[in-house]
Amino acid sequence: MKTFCILCREPIPEGRQRRGAVTCCPDHAKEYRRQRRAERSLRFCRLFGRPARKVKPVGPVLHAHSGILGELPGRNTHNAEERDWMEVSEGS
Ligand SMILES: [Zn+2]
Image 1 (cartoon, rainbow, N blue to C red):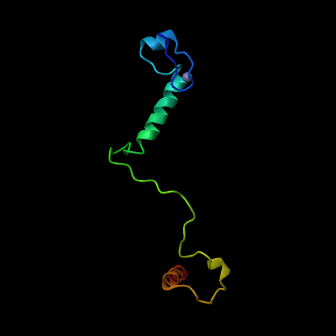
Image 2 (cartoon, rainbow, N blue to C red):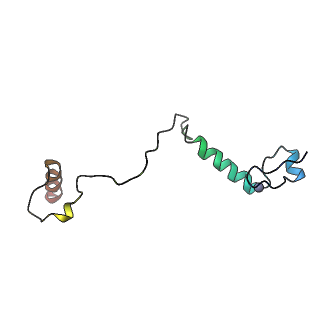
Image 3 (cartoon, rainbow, N blue to C red):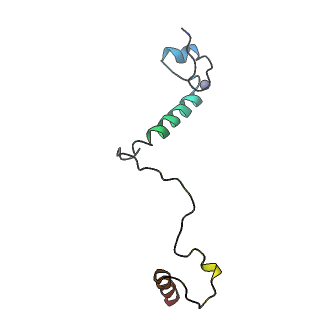
């Protein structure tokens, strides 16, 4: 029976086939393991075996200093959180 590489669909060489290989060459075996590992790491942490964290989509992040460059220095129109930050950084 002829078997084929699960990555590139090339026929698997006789010697590898006898050992039950599912890939045609060591490179594809490595790549296949990488894919399986990446897929599994979505469900379980690779290091601790705990359920994986949900990955949040990456996008623009709002933070306290957004728009600070558009303000004139000295005109304090920011909220209290930002004023605290400014006082701390100037005092040091
Ligand atoms: Zn292959």
